[in-house]
Image (tube, rainbow, N blue to C red; front, side, top):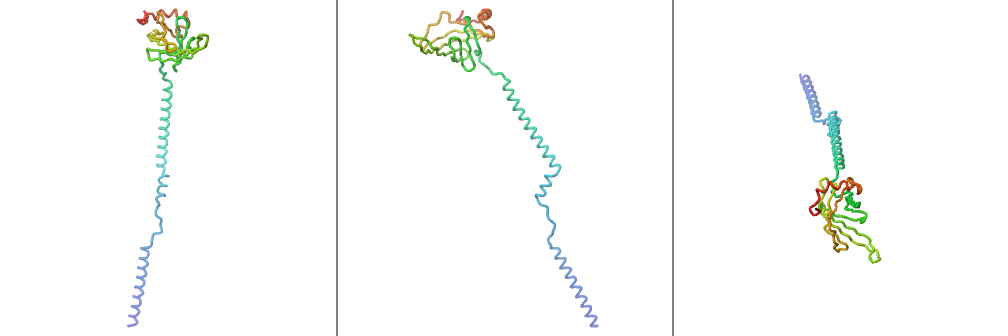
Length: 216
């Protein structure tokens, strides 16, 4: 009887020991850290960048940026070309003119004035008042000296701006006032209309009706 009881107790002790070992192993496994690696943020970003949809979107924006840049460049080039195509405004006095005696007057866009008597002169013009300034070499008492000549005229253009009437206001030589002619008026015609005195005589009658009152 005691032997049976002792064997039973021994079996029960073995069972309890096995259960304790199993429970201990189970608890150990429950708290054992996982060996699987968590996905890194850099890897996720790489996957997003390599995704076909991401690549298509990037290419779309690149193409659109190139299109916009090309459009801006074309607009700028077009604007510059248009600026060069627009004719620059000029003063109506610019050009070459001829008088009845064949004397030619040339006025350029840089306020330069030339004729056979006063080459290399300058001028100012405000739309109706013309001032011509010249420095000439003359012989005075057997000596070569420089003289400053300033001529001021009132200008009236004809309707087609191919002719203009001059009315002399004053002429000074070295700041000394000079006496004007009895007829202080002159008609000048563009050389594109009259190249010589013959053509001047043919065209001059067309502008007599536009002669200023001081010249009548």
